[in-house]
Image 1 (cartoon, helix red, strand yellow):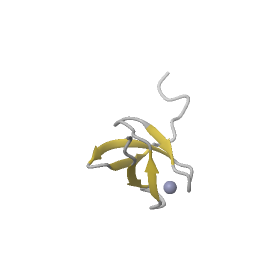
Image 2 (tube, rainbow, N blue to C red; image 1 turned 90 degrees about the horizontal axis):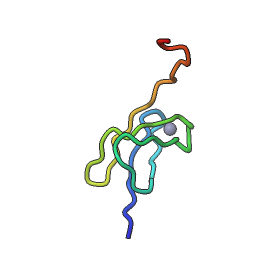
Image 3 (tube, rainbow, N blue to C red; image 1 turned 180 degrees about the horizontal axis):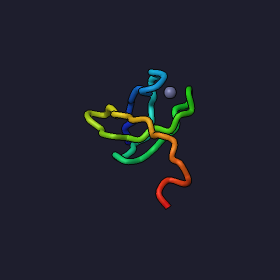
Image 4 (cartoon, rainbow, N blue to C red; image 1 turned 90 degrees about the vertical axis):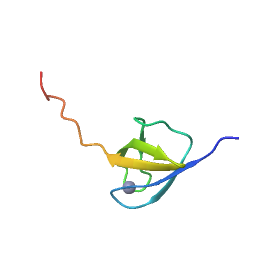
Length: 60
Ligand SMILES: [Zn+2]
């Protein structure tokens, strides 16, 4: 029996339900389509963080 995780999109505040994830994994918000990264998981609740758009020419 797998336990679903829940979280809230930091951008649009949509309630999300996801299959089990681990910290550091990413998912897309189905509502605003932003990419979110799992920051922390506590008691089945995801702490999500928006990922900044990464510039291809960052650094080298
Ligand atoms: Zn969203």
